[in-house]
Image 1 (cartoon, rainbow, N blue to C red):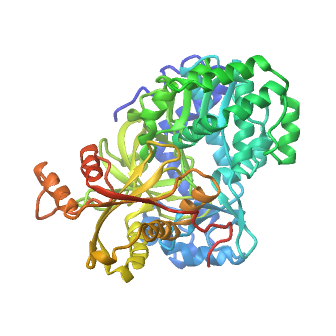
Image 2: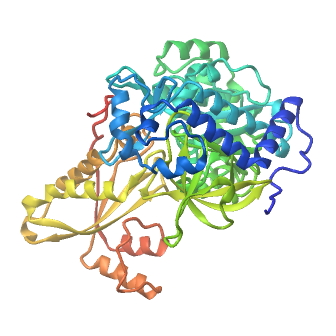
Length: 590
């Protein structure tokens, strides 16, 4: 089997004994992938042997792979939803897990437009914490001296809801930041943040961002790395600074706090941090008042060694903008995780974004892989994947998910010891994504259909459409290209009606999208661009000229190829935006 030199070999000068133990653990796990995976499956199946789900398929206490694979089906969220709803409604019987379900972790929307509810158990926090504990020991091999300063990380929580049965439902990071694992974490010189817990845990996104940015500016000389979870989140922070730098500079100069920050705990912790600093205030004002914001990150935080953000998958669209603002700083993608499970880490975090490969840690869950090639048959184990092949990820977790299709498509790019390393190719079926939102083709089609109902009284219909996630401005927004057929040109839909179509589309999109619009301000108003008649015929002609088959051509429901976008934009006759925010509350629809 090929061996990749992701970790400097031998393990190059760990920064501490603690780091040495973490790196040795990585080596042990990656050298013994198959035996660890067999142990994990035995543990999961033995502890959950009496659960309703495993009994349903007559597993009868078996813990071997062969019986498990022959009797337990591969499933999607929709297959599990009735049982998940029972737990949400208060059924405390062991349906999925012998351990009590502690809460639900919310993930991107279902076909009904609501968030998925992923059942979890309390000990999963320990597993997540274990993976987090491996990140800095790896990073310290590549970037020395990170214990001599702080990390400016823009971290946020979102509103939690409660299910009818009283269980919390919230995003996985909101769960982690609210846990004692995070709030009472022991001091670690390699993991000191500029943002106080009170600012991170503030539910109001403006107040949280304001306090975190203020702390980052005050401690600018201590900052050695700048980050957020997603690339889009870091760009939101830069955009926030562009809008609010005058108020921030005022507070720094006078040692006061903006009255818009009303959260008592945030005000109290900031009172201890704020001291009048007119010199720093003047510096911030001078830098931010410049029209040119190129390299603004290193201009304000000159000691920054790298950006810590996810720039794989849909986030890759933000790389050029981050390079502009950072002056080309390295972008570290450190870990691979989801609401369902934390999977693994990047053993070469300072590589180019295009070369990011995640090593799945075999102790986190039991992993199987469904080949994407139509000719391939059957699932393969973690130790049996092949170089350069693409697979859909299937997981079995300690919390009780069995052979669950995560929806991620991965490509094997190499191995570290016996552990495969994967490049994240894409989310299955996702068309549009600005941040944590994920809109698939079926959902987009449904939104188009709902919006087009407003055109009926004008005897107008949507002939063809495509879409584009526009991230050139912050926040990014969805752009929908419509070609319309108006049977009565004297009674064509008005601008106001087309604006309402934008809003109707937003109302039809999932709650993750609507929360991003309403509560997080991380997505801008949806835009419809009406194009001339026959534009989509021209689009087809262009595709055929590039080698597409006229017999197999289908209109792409999402475009990103620049010449196609230029063709569409050259045919735009009118632009329309959603006139107000869509409806969103923390309450779940039933």
